[in-house]
Length: 360
Image (cartoon, rainbow, N blue to C red):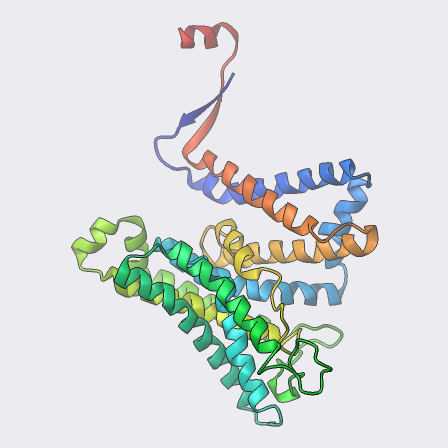
């Protein structure tokens, strides 16, 4: 008989091994799934998990996919640590692209070196302002931020569709719902020839290091951890919970906005009706897979980015639907939640007469 026995205290080892178990079980499940679909499980798994990493171009694509996931997940992880559940990063990403990309369209003939840095700042402002709406509703009306932030994402999607079919539409684009292409001054420079990898990747690493220092070496990082783990103690210590809510929402929104700007000023090069394949929602998996820690988020972002590339690879080589990516990401989240049980419980095996006596 198999039982779950409560641990006297949470296991620190299992806290870090749980994501590893989840990834391993996802790989095994993918092989079973490919087999049921009539494909060679070894070849299919190679195409999904390994083949995208065998070329320099593939590594550049991995960096492009991981950049927005890591940026967004960093902001979400800080909020989740403080028990602030921002689920609307997708909308904040879109607003960053709308505001920052709108600047590129307004000054589309400009060749100024200040255009791109200003776009990044405006992207962050756009995402932060959009995130301020659920923050305001939470702090002044005690509204559930999960619902408000999520619903704001759909408003942002509708606003994006209105703009690309109206004010942002390319006047010489034959009525297609898209903006004009950005000028060279408004595009992120490529840093490796033969790839599409741009300066967004090293900028993300700089932001990640800054967030790490913020959370581990500053007073505000300490306050955020206390507010999340012991809210009563935080109130007793005089920490202002409303200020913490505003801080994490604005920070998460700003990072998501930068991610959106990097998409339209990077691999896309213009504003389209669909900017993101759901990075804002997928980043929630990245944050939890990375244990809400900046370094963990880095590795988790690379793993999830690989799932996007792998989905494209098996779609091209085997003709599988692109939805296979979402299926495996869902399995990964399921296994992560299941493996997290081992943090507070240990598996106990009992046999034969011993089990009978124990039950008696």
